[in-house]
Amino acid sequence: MRLAKRAARQKCRPLSPCGPVRGVEKAPSAETLLTWYRRHRRDLPWRAAPGQKADPYRVWLSEIMLQQTTVKAVAPYYHRFLNRFPTLNDLARAKLNDVLRLWAGLGYYARARNLHACAQAVLKEHGGRFPRTEDGLRMLPGIGTYTAAAIAAIAFGRKATPVDGNIERVIARLFAIETPLPTAKPEIRARAGSLTPPRRAGDFAQAMMDLGATICTPKNPACAFCPWNNDCLARNRGDMETFPRKTPKAEGALRRGAAFVVMREDGAILVRARPASGLLGGMTEVPTTEWTRDFDPQAAISGAPIAAQWRRLPGTVTHVFTHFPLELTVYSTRVPKRTKAPRGARWSSAEEIPAEALPNVMRKVIAHAGI
Image 1 (cartoon, rainbow, N blue to C red):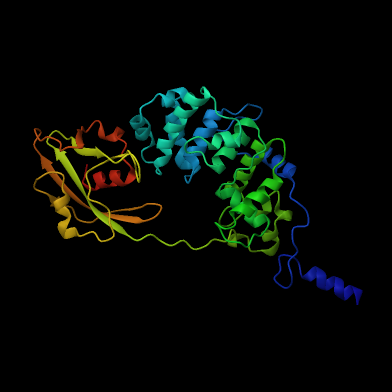
Image 2: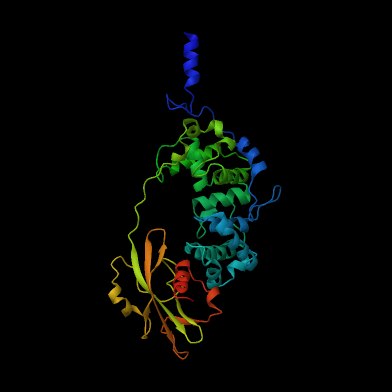
């Protein structure tokens, strides 16, 4: 009888669906993860080398750029910003339009405006030095809970716990958190905080980020190489890829509009600045109609910036923003060199256009017009 019971227990392993799954028997060890990190840490341009002190300016700059953006996309922008603005003082004293120009193409442009405002606030209110506490950092423009914790931990060694998408995934799987996001965020933050060691919190935070980015990936996680694989409840259950649970997002309704590309005989293009606040605030655009759900293409030409012989180009330009997809019909025309720019617009020469603060959707429009 004993042998039969023992055989039954051995047959029904945690990875098998034949019976109840055991919970995590002990808390995962921070030291285990830090040992893994020493061997496998990513070499990132903003990351201080082992034994070197992190630069708060570089940590802050990278964290703002990495919000909702991949490491691969950020790297070239980070290098360009450092070359143009090597110090916080350089960035604070720059013109906002210069900052927007360098940011163009990276998306989520409110980050660029907040980046500039934050640099000015640190220079004016803190003598050019970032506050060292999470509370102090959260008072600055563009710095929320996550970014404040990341800077506090990585730049200043504070016991703080930043939780980004990678860390959410690691924690949700580690503890098999059934509550869907975003409702689960407080529980995930609490669980992550319970694991954060009092010392080397910055290394621990970066180790968690690297673990999520390279091992505990959204699909096909490499559990065999994870330093916490024996402690991971989702791995023991065998349903790792189902975590974190997520509440389905409601898709935004399609918006449509028209864009007008006016080229002068000398190659200059008519552009204007978008309002300082709101979507793509302060960025440069070619004139457009409003982007609405009930856009009437028959009345589009009434929104043209000047009277001219307009040609409707075949096809449309599509772009997806965070909350809605956009579809633009493009009209183009050529005008004499003497044509004056209408109020609120200006001419940008062919040499200047590449350096304009044009968001990706506007670069698509200009390319669609064959320029």
